[in-house]
Length: 316
Image (cartoon, one colour):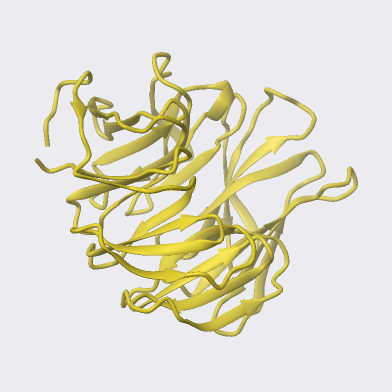
């Protein structure tokens, strides 16, 4: 990987796509990549770019996907409250989970649970996060916002025991927007990280669960890194005034690098320990909407609203 040159432009080794990309994920073996386009999932060979299978069971937009640990099946969730479990080799749906309450948000790292966000649309309603057990389709926990706050996003910790939830103050455009840490088994708030500005549009745990990164979104171009144990801010990357706001984040599998996808199409690679900008990947022409590292640590995949998926070699 080339370092110490923040102006360096790298070109992708592969480019796929036609429609706006909503989500993407590498398989556990790093040999396949699943790409969400509207209400379908395409699975490609990560080395050749050849299409392996197509999942078309959903009748509404897909919000998230998850490869099961064996890589043979993939779970996909859509806005109508349905999760399909499909064979990656054929695209055939082998099972479904129906009618959970709320908009789908996130899978647990082991694939045994998922969290769904329910919007409080009326003034007297509150946002809620529902956690479900996938094997039994039962509700495990419900976390409710207070009357003043709403929920922007949610992510599971690597051990699957806690949730980090990005919040915002209702009716206040640029007020304090905390990130709260919740115990799933008890439904209690463990810690609150005080974010100043327009709220964290993207939050992600480091692989060891000790750190949490958040992006300031539209109102603040900074990217902040937090110590989860103490609840204190470790450092701030930026604000990146020369690039668009960061909408998506991901840690490398060893936790040493953080990648951010920006509204102007650029992708930045950052050193977590020093804050150094290691690289800038340029190729997308619109907002970067999704990204992930391959489990083997050799590649980065980025998806964009311009309809392209780009795979980058990060070790060369």
